[in-house]
Every structure is written in structure tokens, then in C-alpha cells.
Length: 188
Image (cartoon, rainbow, N blue to C red; front, side, top):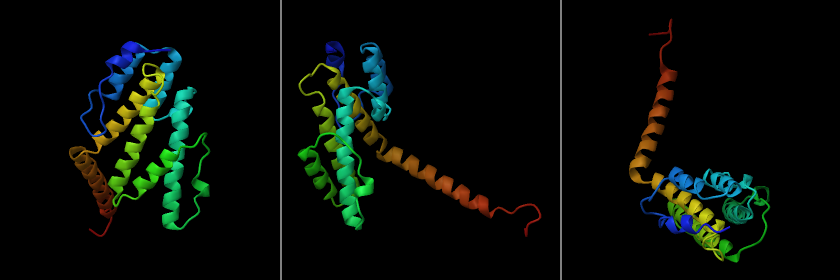
């Protein structure tokens, strides 16, 4: 099924730019345009529960993501000198581009660079879902995945990172000091 109006109205996304809209706004637009089965697939996709979706296009994404994660696990296992087999998951198909992209990402010198390269690879994988039917469900799913990735990077910006860090530190300090509190009848 084609979703010309919805796809034409989707704003441009970049991995590191400002978000033109929130995930719930995207879902609201989808509710007004998608059929029930496609809408359920998009809801699961945006929630990060795409493995539960029965849609074949989302299934392609799940397989590609499994291949990407398998390749990352193999690289990490090799670096640590452990067997990767227990960490491998089944998937259909095989993409040389994913294997090459993961190898390039894992060669980055710092963890943030690796995450950035892996999500850039995911971004391209999401864009590929729209190939062949630029106004179909694949284009809508592609936008949802890329919006999810962009939202993830938006949440890792410095002000949000500081807030998360301070919340973690405050929580640890509270836990540490509560263990030091003098109880009734204590030595205080």
C-alpha cells in the first residue's frame, strides 16, 4: 500500500541534528494514515520491539540488525580472546556491507566513535528499507527507525548527559551514606 501524503509530509532527519518532531508526534501522524496492521508494526518498531512485528519489511530490519550485532559480538570476542558462538543469533540473508561497516566501526579508536559509526551504519540500513517503494510502508518504517536513532543521539547531548551523570552520582551517594547512618542504639 502506498502512503503518498504521509511520506511526502515526513520531515528531513539527520543523525546529529535537532529533531523536527518527537516519536509520539510521528506515531500520531501514522495513526491518521496507516492501516491497522502497518500501524501496529510501526508502534512496535518505534518502541524498540520490532522482533515482535509480523511485517516482512520489519523482518528484513530485524535480520540485518541481528547480523550487525553478530558481527560486533565476533569483533569483541576476538579482542577479548573468547568464543563468539554463544553470542551469535540466527538471521536470514547476509550483507557484505554490514560486515565491512562493522569492521570499520570497530576500528574506531574510542567507544563514542564506534557507537557513532555503528549507528551511521544502522541509518543506512534503515534508508535501504525504502528502496524500491519510496512511498510505501518501507519508507514509513525507515523514517521511524531513523527518528529513533536520532532521538537516541539527541538524548546523549551534553546537557542531558550531565543530568544523567548527576542523577547517577546523587543516587550512589545516597546509597553510600544510607549505609553509614547511625541506627537507634548505635555508637553515636
